[in-house]
Amino acid sequence: MRVFGYSLLSALIFTACVSTQDPEGADDEILVEDFEIAAKEQLLNKWYPLSLDHDNGGYYSQITRDFKLGKKQDKMIVTQARHIWTNAIAGDIYPEKQMYLNNAEHGFQFLQDEMWDYVHGGFYNFVTKDGEPVLQPGQEKTAYGNAFAIYGLAEYYRASGNQMALELAINTFYWLEAMAYDPVHKGYFNVLGTDGKPIARTPEWPSTSDVGYKDQNSSIHIPEAFTTLYEVWPDEVLKEA
Image (cartoon, rainbow, N blue to C red; front, top):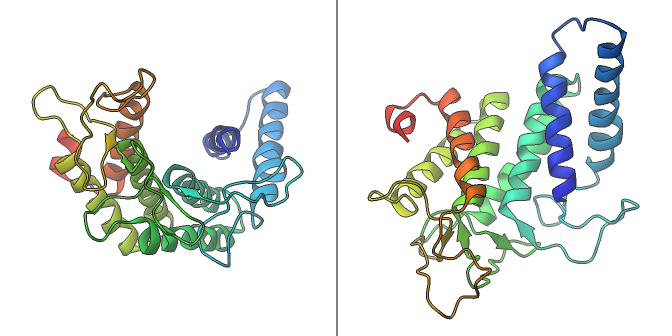
């Protein structure tokens, strides 16, 4: 899934950038054609509608190398949000716009109904295939995962005009600001408890754990998500963040 996510993001971003331009030279034309094939035929057509879970909502998480559904189908907020982002972007590029928007709407409903914590706020990092929280120690909630939720929801709002998606993205932003932001040293703690508070680092945590730290991965994706949200919701607090 990670390879799919980065590969498809790259192919779609490139396709979106060049689709309205006239490429100069034969080499550019070949490159554009290669990316079009990679994005549409080798990725989008392979993953959709296969990955849509019509029984439980959201998207399947485990797909085998020969494109069969795997047995382990716990769902992670990052991959669910990336599917939403991907379909929202694809809807702007390809003529099957409504199909891709329907795919994105499918994922949005799962995020809204099953992955959002209506008691403490924020998105769970993992849930079972039918939406029950999987509360693994040190992975209950993350700033990284909630940032990707903002990223996908904002892009879906841009493509569809779904006001509920924008409201959920805004609520997630305010939740991150209230729970993960460090007002003293700045930046955002990544690993959060079920209640949203940063988990303190103690000697019991292994040296490989990033509990209690601010990591590079979440620190680059949070501004990415905030930037996308600002493009559709130019709020001054968000701008400062």
